[in-house]
Amino acid sequence: MQISEKQIELVNSRIQALEKAGSFYGKKLKEAGITEIHSAEDFEKLPFSEKSDLRDAYPLGLMTAPEEEIVRIHSSSGTTGTPVIIPYTAKDVDDWAVMFKRCYETAGITNMDRIQITPGYGLWTAGIGFQNGAEKLGAMVIPMGPGNTDKQLQMMQDMKSTVLCSTSSYALLLAEEIEKRGIKDKIHLKKGVIGSERWSDKMRERIHNELGIELFDIYGLTEIYGPGIGINCPGETAMHYWDDFIYLEIIDPVTGKNLPDGEIGEIVITTLVKEGAPLIRYRTHDLSRIVPGKCKCGRCYPRIDIIMGRTDDMMKIKGVNVFPSQIEEIIGSFDEISSEYQIRISHLDGKDTMRIYVEASGDHNWADLSRRIAEKVKGRIGFTPIVKIVEIGVLPRSMKKTARVIDERYD
Image (cartoon, rainbow, N blue to C red; front, side, top):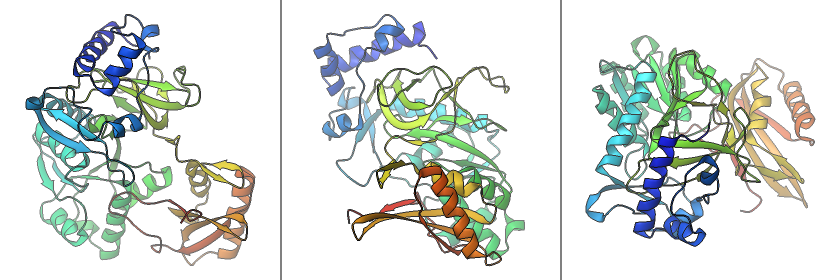
């Protein structure tokens, strides 16, 4: 996707605001001698921004609009390092709600739906983002927030919730609890809007089958408004994103060069109209590709594929680069095991060891299954892991994001 004249005009407006505010990026532009751009080639010469830049700006170094116009701050959900504080103006909050409303509408959700929101509220953008969009749509909101599964299920039944908003991990936990309690006939859910973590096809299939609902993948990150900047349409996996609010590039994560449509690389996002903390060429570290061509749904908004992983979730084991998505793909090829897995990496007796825990019912020959999984992993990544099979439900379920990889080498 090449940047349009209208988008260039909007980028120039943000450049002026950043330079006037003297933000970290305004200083970068000043050093580079750039005051405006006129073409796609000019745009690609603009410097990238990184999460480290945003951390260095703590607490309010990203604030680009006057303080009297800032109505809210949000912060990234990361648990390590200095947090990233993102200021929002009233227009930013409203723009975000407009984008989220589009997401709901794309999923076929209307103001007659009852939307149960389970992600967290507070500094995190998730809960309040889902709520703002639902209120903009005019739907009834049930703002549960995370946890208290008994209360979640009670309200789901009593309020006859039709839409579930959650992480994939919590959607699976709820699906398993509904099955366990035998209350599926009392649940009125029709759709699920799932965000904040990557999920496998196998997990998607389990949630779809167990809850009997249509699932939608929502995209977003705190630095760029929050969830709601993109969603897939019915029957499709690719996600439309709102190119009147953001400009999205796919780059080679090593060289930083733009990749042709259809090639997998790192998502880089520029906010076109954000006032509180505009970002230009922000490296998300998420991996995807631009899906070329028009969608059969008829919408004119461009599309990216599902999020395939992150440039920074690579594990180096025995000198081999391993991505969790590779293990996930192998697990997905075995019908005998569930979607849940955990990878534990440890350093014992001078060498790295990878243990993969998977879930299966007691109806299978676990020793043979374990051997076959280990062989398939070795064929893919070059060394043999220890595969341990446990009963379904033994691996931890999370109300937020599930920790799939635990590296014990540095504990």
